[in-house]
Amino acid sequence: MSALKRGEEAAFELLVRLHQHRVYGLCLRMLADRAEAEDLAQEVFISVFRNIQTFREESLLSTWIYRITRNHCLNRLKFLRRRAHERQQPLEDTRQADLAGESLADPVAGSRLQRPDRAIEGRELESRVLQELAGMSEDHRELVVLRDLEQLTYEEIQDITGLAEGTVKSRLHRARMELARRMAPHLKDT
Amino acid sequence: MEHDTAQLHLSELLEESLPPELKAGLEAHLATCAECRDSLALLERTLRAVRGLPRVEAPPQFASRLRRRAAQAGLLAARRRRRQGPAGMNFSSTMALAVVLAAVGALLVLVLLMQKQIALLVEEAPPPVLQLAQPAALQTLAEASWAVGGAVRADGRLVPPGSALGGASLEVDLELPAARWAEFRRAAGAVAGLTREAPRVGPDGLVHLLVALRPGS
Ligand SMILES: [Zn+2]
Image 1 (cartoon, rainbow over the protein chains, first blue to last red):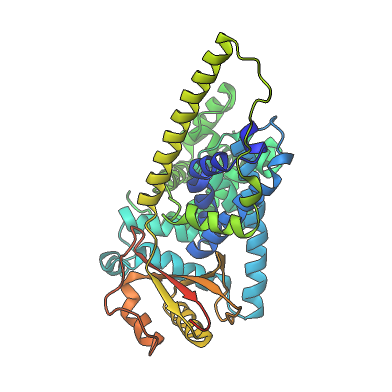
Image 2 (cartoon, each protein chain N blue to C red):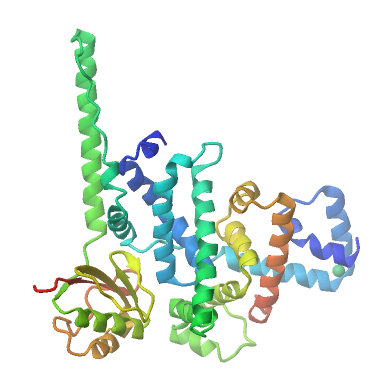
């Protein structure tokens, strides 16, 4: 930690190695766009490098980095929405395209899509979950991502979002119920 | 327990965080309410699907691109390791021993660092570089990339589709879906130096192409 605060390059390299996947993962799940997610994840680390002096050791370094990541994600989503609005192109369009690129491009999965009555599995199920997740509101999506994907504790989630414990739990439950409703048509007989 | 209340506690039942009295009340309600049983089953399947999503990994070039960007922002140069040399010591035998130990330690650290550097080099083999002299050719490549759903980064920063690239000397990263290489080449038209086959495809299914604009080269 002190090496980080002294600004040692090796310490930053290590920090990036340790946290790059989770920071990128959080950005990707929030933005549902690979290129934007990488760009944003890099901005997060630049911001971490710049602000390491303000980090107080009463919280975990990982939690602090997550908090920065979450704030960057929300700002970027706001920015992307504004840009999409100016270009009169719904944000969902580019998102769906990117998610499709991730796994729906699989021709086998594509043919199975013709039969929505059939229970889906594997890669197709994954891409459905991602699509439905991307379609939810940000405040619902982030809680599902933090708790059910990143498997953080409630204490960590409160620290990252600044929400009270009761709010985290009740909002997370509503978010999960919403996701379940969205997934219902794809989850028959699994 | 009432139906509406029961609906609010389904997550806690699955997370096993419900106090015993509430749990008993909820289970009693579940025994009589098919709708709540269905909700619970659907919630459980949904959470299983979410938790079963594969872990995401950052792209292989993430660290090297970040390093470039941090250096450009003046972050790494200013933060070079400080050298700490003890001044004016009195050499006793214990001090000499300490110096020897420190030297061995420093050597170990150096070896470890070198190994790490080597590992980084192996992990992040640089993408092929295309040298261009004309800014217009660079713009053509960027537009061809956007046309096939690729990403364009100028000096490490993501360039929004449709932007005009400019500047005296630029390094531009193109990141393209490998499957659309032929389409990209057609859109790029007469830009020299593009191979028929896609260059090495990364584990993420993407092709990385580094384009350097050197006006007058
Ligand atoms: Zn009920």
